[in-house]
Structure formats: C-alpha cells, structure tokens
Image (cartoon, rainbow, N blue to C red; front, side):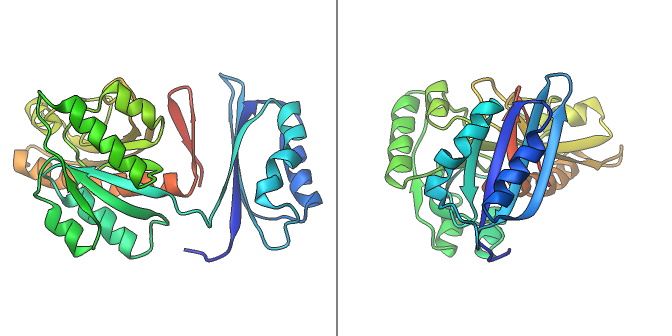
Length: 286
C-alpha cells in the first residue's frame, strides 16, 4: 500500500455535459495532482458516477475547508458527494459464529497491512473463534443469543460498537439475522458474505440446495446488508466450476475458499472508498 497522503472524492449526480471538465478544472486550480480518475454513466437512469483521487502534497485547500470551496460546483450539478482521505483508518468490528475461515483471512490480511483499518473488537455468539482473536491480540466479546434474548443481545452489541467508535461491521459467516433496528444504526455499513452466487440459493444451507440441484458452478457473494435478507447491494462475487464427481463436502470446502476471497475484496474496496451505491446496486471503481 502506498504511504502517499491522498484525498478521494466520490460523486453521483444527473448526467450532463461539463461534469468532468468542471471537476478537473477545480482540482487543477487548487494545485491537485490527480493520481486516479474513473467514471461511469448509467444511461438508463441518467446518472453520472465518479471517483477521483489526488495527492494532497501541494493541494492548497485544507480538507476541513473543502466543503465550502466545492459547494458551488456541487450545487450547480446537483451532486451527492463525499470526501475521504487515505490517512483515515476506519474502525471495523467483525461478527462471527463458529466458522473461522473468513475471520482468519481478514485477520491475516489486516496484520499484513492489506487492510488500512483498525479492528478494535470481534463479537461472536460462540466461543469457537476466541483463540483466533487472542492470537492476533484483538479483544473478543462473547454474547449468547437465543430466540428469547435477541433484542437484549443486539442492544449489548450496539453498546459495544458505540464504545469502540466502530465505523462499519463485517459479518464473517455470522449465522444470525440482524434485526431492522440494528441495521438502521449502520446503513450501508454492514458487509455480509453469503455462501452462494446470489440471487440463487439465498437463505440457509445454500450448498446443500446447490448439491441437490446438481449445479455446475458454485459461488460466493459479498453484499451490504439491508432489511430484506440477502437482497442488499452486491459488492463482489466469484464462482468455481464443479462436476458430478464433487460431493457435498467438496462443495463446502471449495466454497469456503471463495467466501474468504470475495469477502476480503469487498472489505478492502469499502475501506479504500471504491464503492458507490445507487438503485440497490453498486459501482466498484478500479
């Protein structure tokens, strides 16, 4: 990862002439050295989406003053936008149940410096992965959840997230359905991994259903969590080819490899501010 201090501007607005020129000229006028710029037009919806990243050395606007300086352009083009910086390390909480492969992969990448974030807490409804949290010296919180205490358990989880100033949550094979109230506290800031190529085989035991159906491809999907189960905006997917020779255990084993790769990509892209959401889908910029 580069140590260069950069700013990232994410924009969505009605598609119209002069957008790119106005943005580039604004940055040029303030001595910005653009490092990356990518854009997308959705012709059906008439939307323009853009991600632009520039070197902050020499840029003559303090990021705290950027809003005032950029507002005239944003108003003119009816933009929805946000500014981020590479110096900001978002705080990530990981929720996990018994399966440890996605958690292990995230923690390894975090320790290796691939994920520019902080992980202040791991929360689980089981103790199976506590050893892994301790190995990486990350606090682990066990919260028992059953059909009678779900509301109280979620209230405890939310209190822990607030105490740790958590910016977003990753469900690393967390086998509990979050309530609408919980999700409303972190809109578009909860990332899930589903062990299927959505929209096929949503819900529980997708590998069993895929095996019964005799599919030739299995997949994994990482998406933002919404109140509708497994229906949130998709960030990343991948597949693996299988055959009639593969039994159920083969599907589960090969699927686990897909799950951890797909989840880690989605988390990294979220951290790097590469994802723009619109119309219940995403644009992921290179």
